[in-house]
Image 1: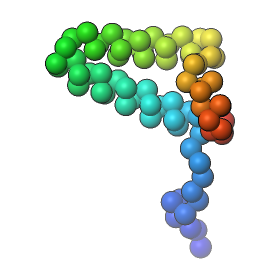
Image 2: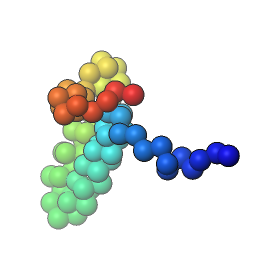
Image 3: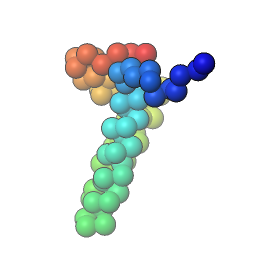
Image 4: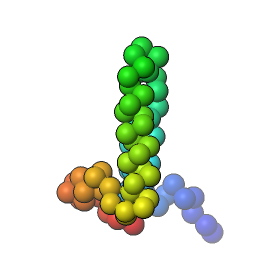
Length: 73
């Protein structure tokens, strides 16, 4: 019999953390932009960082996650 997927609890990978952190920062900065539009610069920074990491395969957050011991895959 197959076990539910939730029974296989493994630590999150770097890519899961990156998506969670980047998405959270974007949503928080968009919300804060309703108070002050300058928060959109943070949204743009996250977007640009995601774009450059796609082309260069280097992301500052991965460096931090490696130091914290987060597994790659």
